[in-house]
Amino acid sequence: MASSEISRDDQIAVLHALQDEGKIGHIGLSKVTPEDIRYVLKYRPIAAVQNVLNTTDRDDPTVEMCRALSIPYVAYRPLDAGLLARTHGPAAPLRWLLSQGSHVAPIAGTSQPRHLNEIVAAVQPGPA
Ligand SMILES: NC(=O)c1ccc[n+]([C@@H]2O[C@H](COP(=O)([O-])OP(=O)(O)OC[C@H]3O[C@@H](n4cnc5c(N)ncnc54)[C@H](OP(=O)(O)O)[C@@H]3O)[C@@H](O)[C@H]2O)c1
Image (cartoon, rainbow, N blue to C red; front, side, top):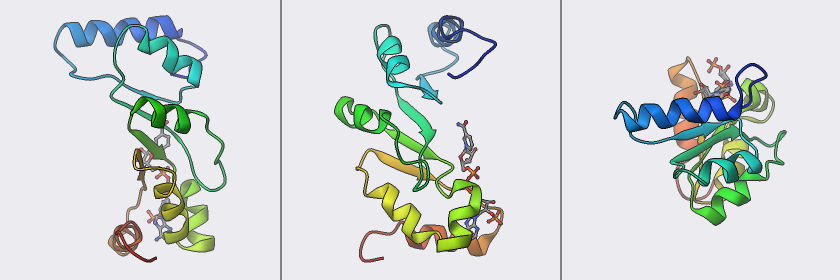
């Protein structure tokens, strides 16, 4: 949603048109504030919110808002673009994200099968 070039109204109008034409089923938002969410909810449901959240960038008020509104929250850049994984390993940062609520789903990125295995192991239920 954050854009200096295209207004929020114009972005939302395009999404509504695509939904009305049947080209998209649901509307998800990224890089949004609580005010953005309140604005969009005046017109349509929100399927998911995707914002940056990790143990360095941990103060996103939309986490609580999404919990209260039962909107799934997708945490992007959960490893702070790899910095957290390189300094602490991926488990602690990913498990912190999972502890923020059952509505929070981290989406870690990797190009390496070994790292993928570590990420999958880190988000398994049970003791870390
Ligand atoms: N909505 C948005 O505006 C937005 C913005 C940014 C990102 N995203 C999305 O968020 C997802 C993840 O973002 P991201 O990839 O930028 O950040 P990230 O998941 O925080 O970090 C990815 C980096 O972590 C490294 N890494 C992963 N596991 C590791 C491990 N076990 N040990 C050491 N390093 C490890 C990866 O390197 P290797 O490749 O070497 O494993 C990669 O460089 C992507 O799907 C992306 O599309 C969305």
